[in-house]
Image (tube, rainbow, N blue to C red; front, side):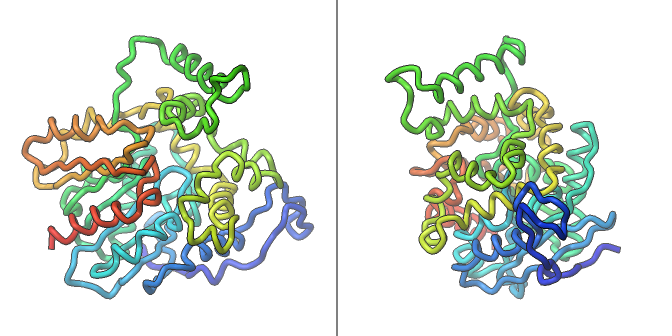
Length: 375
């Protein structure tokens, strides 16, 4: 029987990269480090948070954070993070969204503080594992219906869930969702990958005056980077760098510091520490994502070829960052396909792929308004 398990307080013991008690630690991380890093992400959240593990039927555990849990007369909002993320990244959204309703967040299977289980080797089976873990989680926390929101990879997974368990989804919110477009190129996947690699190398190697000052601010370049990294474990360089991993992450993803200004003002390393400790653990979720991402940056089972099967009574809301590397075309294409559903597409200004953090105020306003309209 699935149940609610232990809290984070049972995670003890801090390790460093040279820790005799744990033999020789190349990566400067531990479960305790992740607990501390997550707590810093939530330091400025005013809402009362309940934090606990949900034990699933197969013994796996999903780390869960709930805000305003006692509210029972409003439809709860459930938020699912994206690839390489965790519950801590929702810190700027919790207070606004949990003002009048309960908000639930959990670390996906294979990510953050959740179980690093072994995934299947086929895309269909991996998808089934993720979807079933979400359903088992829902049964434990005893949610009948929910507004289900997912960012990026989480947007793909909640779409899969809505197709499988439509009775449980009152409204579907897709935030810069990954995995929707079909690969319409006539070129071979390898040729597409080779061209993307050339563009990435050209942007980073100082060959002339045309080199961009901030390459990763270019959404097209980011898309090329995703294509290039799709054949690898994307975060392997961070883990492989060992004790230099945190600095490497800070150098290449400096943009996250600006996304969480209040947290960064108190501790400029807090966000980087959280991202590092989330992803320096055993990378089973990362490997699972790679299986689903078998077509050089495109989903093995693209959602645009399946979204027409969603129940007609489920409203669908897309929220894109205006400057995101993910094309908002998928939202408008879905709007044309789902003629009987209410489908809304929002493009948030001054925001990229991490729209929930880049422009938290506008993001929170959109989500709060659509939730309030359902009550």
